[in-house]
Image (cartoon, rainbow, N blue to C red; front, side, top):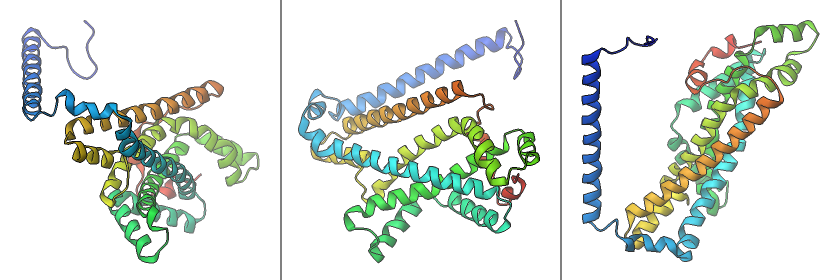
Length: 295
């Protein structure tokens, strides 16, 4: 038997112990599932009558479809704005101009440290105080602002890490050909870095979509809030939340599948560096990392 790189192959006693632990874990998991099922069934939450409202068009038209529309609208606008902001800040952190580099670094580090919910609440009351947006769109504007600022800062680090992962010889060759820093970044480095950044960007876009649910706290009309409204109206909280969870999973899976398809198309059309991983891209940034990432 080939030895494992991470640990030695278990002996006979260790294999028996592992089998026993696995069996006990499975039994305990089944007991917990049975206990939860029994408790919900005793409360009548799993009866067919609790699921019947989801077969009517009125429930979907009144509750779920507006929630889906709100979630997709906030996610789509936030994704576009966060991508634009993230690329601008990411390139700015690698600028040769110290003022631009430090301003972008301060912005990125600050908004990465502030919780998304705090930014949503602050933007919501700020817009309401100064009548920046119509009251009808206050919650939507607050959600978009919070998601854009936080995810833009995270994407900036993804962009910086993606560019820095490229071989340094490419920037040096471009400089030897007489290309300016901006031309090198725009024509040579960024197109290649985008391919390697795609897996991490896909993960971050899914995060944006899921974080729209935080807008529940500022009365934003999204899927989770509408799910609780369904539960209150029909006294079927558990089925309502299960349906909402299934809808969120379906939307996230669709987004991930589309982004993965785009990534495959790009990789077939041109050769690029190996993709980055989420744990290595965003954790590299520190306040002064922009200086070390200049080209």
